[in-house]
Image 1 (cartoon, rainbow, N blue to C red):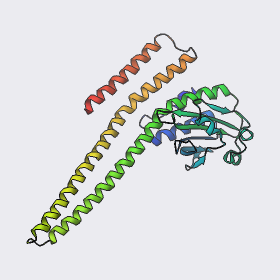
Image 2 (image 1 turned 90 degrees about the vertical axis):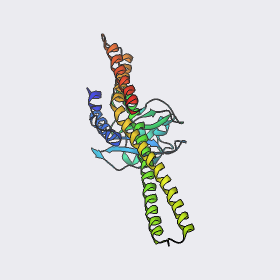
Image 3 (image 1 turned 180 degrees about the horizontal axis):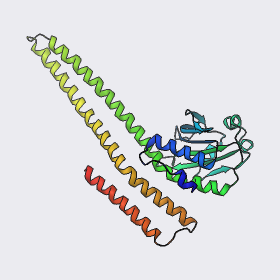
Image 4 (image 1 turned 120 degrees about the horizontal axis):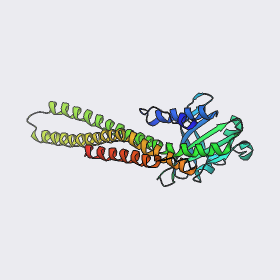
Length: 281
């Protein structure tokens, strides 16, 4: 019931909207005061930039913090959940942020990826009271981190893609403005100055080639966004089905033909992905 409530997120949500809804559901359903998702700012894993932060019943502004001498440093150095069900401030006396917030319990899980560090993000839950059911929190946090990994990585990919599209758009606008300036210059050139006219025409031709190239890049970006949109639901089905069966298998909860039904669900989603590739080709 709790897991279902946490993952009960509108399928239309994506990127930061999805992550915000996920963090809110985690905090409310697990009754923790703070919840956040963040990502390392460098390959040395020395600093974290938060993507979404929930505190005291609402979202707050994102921030950066150093990882040295913090429990998050321990999380990002491994591949499993790190939990301090009580006295975390005493365990990490040099973590000023924990001291200022009066944190009693900490649980963090790495979101694994194919990046050089092996970690794309970190999921952290904090509370000012001890955690009573340690094993339950470990299991559910580990599952949620696995479930969120695809959406978090997709969010960073989309964010990077959007930055590239915005950059290309800015360059296109500058190139267009440059062409307008050149066209005005051409209008002022004396028709008898044949050599100067040829030079300006050549400049205009080069600018047109730049615009053509950048337009293609912008179109490519739009196409990739469309593919990502089409793939979002089947990828979510595959991820939820696979991770759900993994969790059920761990606790011997698989019943009847549920395994084969899950295979069918995954296969149908894969067929949809394949058809999407064919359509866009």
